[in-house]
Length: 77
Image (cartoon, rainbow, N blue to C red; front, side):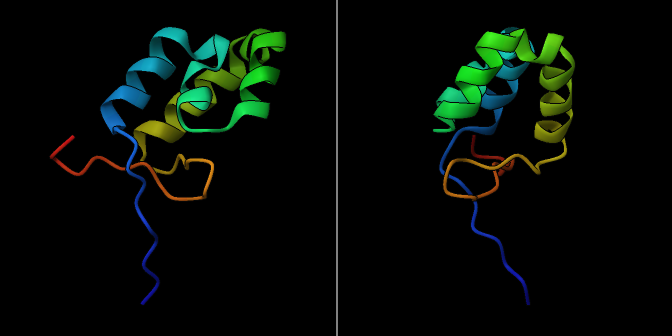
């Protein structure tokens, strides 16, 4: 059975940061992905496209933190 570790980062916080400030990569900074966060700042979230793709990935529970653990809604977030 393939069981992926779940991150301790708050799913609702990541989704909100991505939706509101996604073009600035704030959700990536929060998850510990500093380099890609910096790239998002300089490219304005890939002109919004990268931010939109990230938001979709977050909503499906496939976004990972800097250690590769998935950020999922667990009901206790």
